[in-house]
Amino acid sequence: MKLLCSTGALIGQPNQRDYKLLEKFSKELNYDGYEFMMYNSWYDGMEDMLDYLKGLNLYIPVVHCEKGIGKCVGIGTEEELAHGLDLFEKDCHLANELSAEKLVLHLWGSRVSDSNFESNLRNYPKFAAIAREHGLDLMIENVVCNVKDPMTRWCQLVEAYPDIQLIFDTKLAAFHGQMNLLYEKEYEWLWKDGYIRHYHVNDYGGGLMDWANLQTLPLGKGNIDFDAFSSFLKKTGYNGMATVEATAFNSEGIVDIGILNDCFDKIRAWEI
Image 1 (tube, one colour):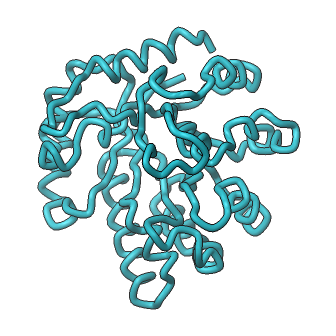
Image 2 (cartoon, rainbow, N blue to C red):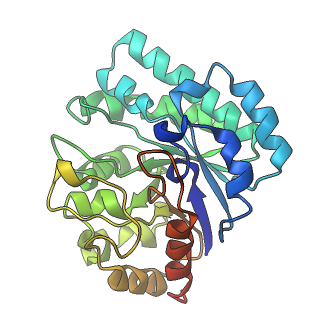
């Protein structure tokens, strides 16, 4: 299994979202590559950013689209949807330039979340078509909901679009009390039929829909049963990619690489 590090675990507002820090971090991480997290503030200077990143020759097989796209789709007005599609088109360009193969999309999000899910459901094909035009595999994440829950929304999407691809985030599932659903016979189709194409592996320390504790924690710092999860991956024969997103910078932007390397070491010790 290839282990990726989310650039969002390293770069955030406290260190001014300085993507040039990746040059230093890349030499210190015990990883296989990056999942590149796009931020809205980078669009204006995206070509300069791409020139810099391509000069580093990093392995970036996955791009995580700007999270605000889901808000645009949820609002669903003509103007908001057009804005979301424009951002997504730019993210596809970014992915192509970085030689990525996959895109992660929050199809819903922000405060609007899944409150207008009819819009998210109806407009998914527009994003899937753009991704196909760029030769990219689009994966929809089990993002937190404030009306229903991620598994319900996934089931609705699969029923409407049987060729859809999904990405399972352990923290987001645990937030909704849905980690164990992954192991139940009722949802075997998620892995048996190949819907789940990637995993985000992070810990969660709160209770059911505990919004105050929705932090992305390193493995072992929350309450997810990773023994059960690793056994599940071994049982299903999963040998794809997994991304660690655990926040490794403090309020001053200082990054502790050891936090992420410890996560990679723990996952490799699972002997999947």
